[in-house]
Image 1 (cartoon, rainbow, N blue to C red):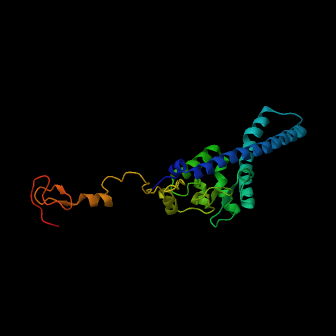
Image 2: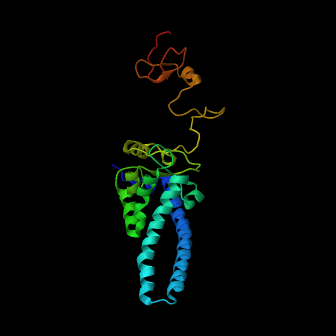
Image 3: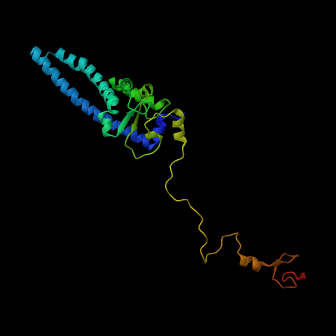
Amino acid sequence: MVAPFELVLKDSALQENWFRRLIAVIIDSILLGIVYAILAVLFFIGMWSTSGSFSFGALRLGLFGAGALITWVLSVLYYAITESMWGASIGKMLLGLKVAGEDGNKPLLVNAFIRNVSRIHGLLFLLDFIGGMVLEGDPRQRFTDRVAKTVVYQAKSNREGPFVESRILTADETAAADSSPPPATGAPPQTESPPQPGTAPEEGQKTAEDSAEQGAKCPKCGAPVKEGNSFCPQCGTKLDSQ
């Protein structure tokens, strides 16, 4: 079995797929960060208006308690809702990526939620990615993608091959893609060019003129003799008339 990460290391289409996904995560994180900042400001304004002042304990509770839980939940809901409604988050749409379900269409909300549940914590998301790279399956999937039966593909790509299709590849198809011959470089096949006029014939080839000049051979010593000779010029043996 070939591990998915081995295919990623040697297939440029897969490398582009994961690079685009990395950039999409950065874009989505920036957008979510703006939302979190706005919510934090509203939270503090609400606390100030109700109590008139902040206490250090309340500040810690707001930032590191409920605030962290809210950001995790919002992150999972953001990806699940956008991917089930539009087939991609905003970052993925900007990078030409789409999320497809088992039938090749947009995933259902429950499937989109399952594939993004690991986003509640960075360590879980990292383990999710590692699981997808070492376990058998489509190399475009994280582990939760395999559970949710979803895949991320490049909706806008000039490349060809199975790794840009909107369907989930089976283990056999993945292995076949790995063993397929490399694409042709476009160089025309080399053919033997005919000998040009005035060039010497190749070694081992004899022309008609050589065969005609060679003539008969002496039956005793094997020396070549010209047509019409009665005696061998080498050993003097009398030759039969031809």
